[in-house]
Image (cartoon, rainbow, N blue to C red; front, side, top):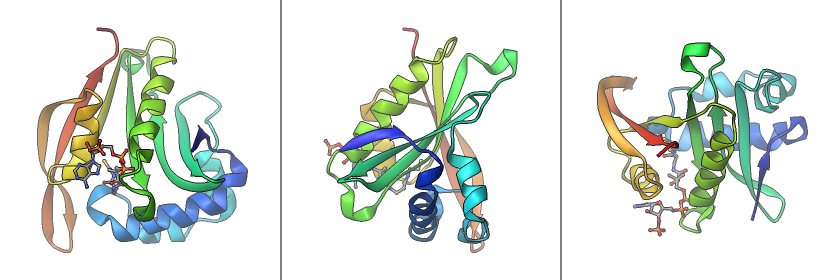
Length: 170
Ligand SMILES: CC(C)(COP(=O)(O)OP(=O)(O)OC[C@H]1O[C@@H](n2cnc3c(N)ncnc32)[C@H](O)[C@@H]1OP(=O)(O)O)[C@@H](O)C(=O)NCCC(=O)NCCS
């Protein structure tokens, strides 16, 4: 297993896996498959390379050189928000699950956020009924601070989102 920041050469593999994620786990993402499918490889590359201002970085986990999962670390640049970072879009391919990839990716993302100057906490949102992801985040020390009712509406059905945070300056 290897974990590293994605670069523009990872764009085709990222787009294929992201499409798979949006198709097989619609409740875990606010984006829809059409959002991703409509992007050119240049647009995808621009989204995954580390932003020049440090606001977005995409980490990937690889198995034998093949992209198996990813998560974004988002760091707002406004002075009043710079003490926090957010994790978003976490996904591990179904065939690779329960092998420790998600846990390793999460630990790498936490370490990454901790290394950003001034960051003291991490936040994320997770589908309130997403048992697997909630167990993963809780095992890393994230705690719940609230639930957003009806955060997503998919095929006419509402889904709540739970918000978790992890203090890094304890
Ligand atoms: C959530 C997800 C990333 C976990 O990835 P993974 O590689 O299977 O995770 P790991 O193998 O590292 O498991 C780490 C811990 O997570 C928890 N976990 C993972 N899958 C679980 C499941 N199906 N049921 C209960 N707990 C689960 C366990 O605590 C596990 O530790 P353990 O194996 O020692 O019991 C993966 O299931 C996934 O991509 N799901 C679909 C997309 C998604 O829900 N993303 C999160 C958006 S917020």
